[in-house]
Length: 203
Picture 1 (cartoon, rainbow, N blue to C red):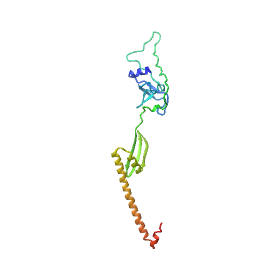
Picture 2: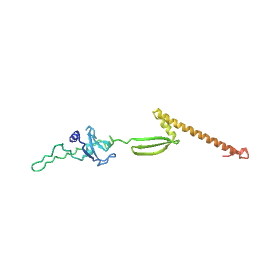
Picture 3: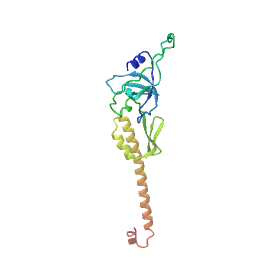
Picture 4: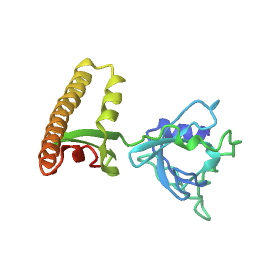
């Protein structure tokens, strides 16, 4: 890897291609080497793939370009035929320490979970970066109360509990009103019975 380290030290960003596919990176993906880490680590060649920086083992990569000639110099010519500099040899394969190391150093898009209260009901939805993970779905008020109990932020916990309890009060008042209406209807129904004793047997 000495020639590769020298190229990087000279300010180059050697172009490489991924030879071994993984769950995160497909074979044939191209990128630029931006730095070399500690050779004691199995995956120390750091490659920029788009916006991500992913470490690889040397055996997982292959160079796709030749080193550039130094500025102001021209290739020498022999008397009989032009001489060409030998192309750099690919890095010697190194034993692969683990197969699941591709995820190391790869940035995961942020996960945003939104709990929303609107029109007397609770909903939750989730997105990861620009992709929607879950559409808005209903959440029981009891689940919101249980979630609030786990929060360390007093202000957020108090706001959630206050909203849940306020809704509970409204529902209790509605239930009490319905029970009163039902009782009044039962009393009015008993007035239609010809004998008082029959009302008690009505199911």
